[in-house]
Amino acid sequence: LVANPNSARGAGACATDADISLIQTGLRDNYFSGIGKGTAVYGSGNSTILIDDSNLDSTSMGPDAEVYVEVGGLAIFSRGSGIDAIKARGSGTRIQFVDDSLTDISSDIVPPPEGAMIMEIGELDDYRKLLCTGDIVQQGCLTLTNPSGTLLDANVGDRIDLIETMSFT
Image (cartoon, rainbow, N blue to C red; front, side, top):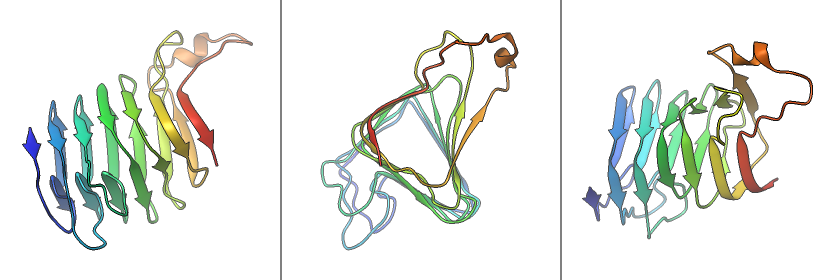
C-alpha cells in the first residue's frame, strides 16, 4: 500500500517508454498539484501498465483520472481491480480488459479518440469484465477479441454481457 504520494504526474507510478506492473497493490489518497495527469498511474510512449487485482483510490483526484495513458501507451486490467476513473488519449493508445478481468470503475472512462478500448471474450457464460457506475464516453474504437475461440460455439440469440454502465455518451 502506498498512501499520500504527491506529484505532478503519476503520484503512485509514472512511466514513459517503460512498463509498470501493479499486482495486488493499493494506491490511496494520491494527490497531484497543478494540471497533472494520472493521480495514481501515468504512462506515455510505448509504456504498458498492468493493473492486476489492485485498488487505486484517490480522494484528491484533481482535473484528470487515476489511470491516465497517452501517446501510444497501453493499460491492461486483469482480475479484480477497483479504480475511480480512467482516461486515455493520443494515437495508438489502448485500454484493455483481459479475459479474467473484473474491473470496477466508480466514475468515468474516457477512451482514446484515436485509439481503442479492447474487451477480451472468454467463456460464453462468463461474468461482466467491466462495471462502471459513471459514464463511458463513446469515442475511439471498441475492439472485441476472442483468443480462446469460444465464440465458435455460440448460437444465435446467445447473450454475452461484457460491460455494465450508467450511460454511454
